[in-house]
Length: 401
Image (cartoon, rainbow, N blue to C red; front, side):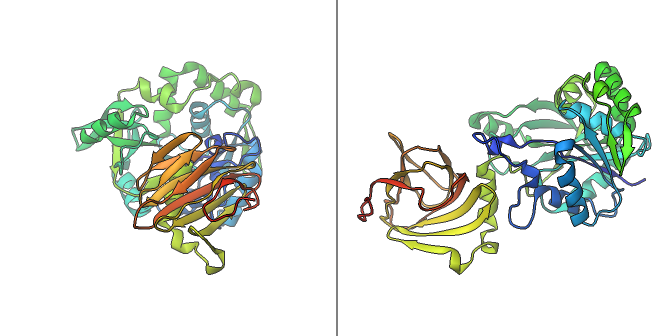
């Protein structure tokens, strides 16, 4: 039996747009002729997968169907959530539809992850397919590349059959704690799940009976039109709003892990997005988008909806003007060198791979006191992303008017 891919595509992705009401869901952002949802659809074209089920809401239905057509996926089902109840009701409702046999393995992907080396990923889940039962759950761990404070972690121990049993979850830790967890061979918790349909049903029956009854009724009373299940709103709204982690994972002992050492990111912050662009910047560089200044140069790499990605090159002893912006905030990731940064009344020194946020209206400056160039990846986020939105207070090159 093939593995059924289920894509959770109802998230708002508001972390990237904290000061905007007109935000884009992360999974649909155009990062340069590609989206995270599109990448997810590409991943499920492997021969081990059955046709996909997409869990989303009415607000995103048009965008979901557009991407399915663009990626030439003709066979699919969509399960439409009538209200926001978090991932537990979404996962259960999707599993309950009649298209899925009781013992079929389900691979739950989120629509907003960036995963490379999918051949390794697919080989790992195919290998563990025979280990699935009507009770257990497999989660996915990614070998940490740094002591990140943006992800949760888990620890495992080996049990019979060379299976990695999860023995402890660690919520997003502080950096020192993250370093300790990594020394204990902890893995990042990726938020993806692999289990059978009957395991989902059995776990919800025992551990979340209210959610179970509500979702059963929502699916029974649903209407199927144009490959889309419209869940019954009155029934679905009675489901307790809980994440799958809190509703099920924290209440069961039968959790195993598939541990992977592959490039992975949830692009959940501008820091992660800037890392991605820095890694792939050669794909975006065009000579016409390189602009020279007295302090060095900058390159416009990609302009999306309400954001602009740049690389700043500050020569030795180069100093940008002391300035602020009325219409944009900025996110900086140092990729080379050790700049001195002024942020309002603070002066901080940054090193490679360190990040700093420049809020809208904050007075700021970059200085390169060293002998080698400084490189900074910059994301401008706001309603006006032009050089005209600069108010200069001081400038060693005489540009203050």
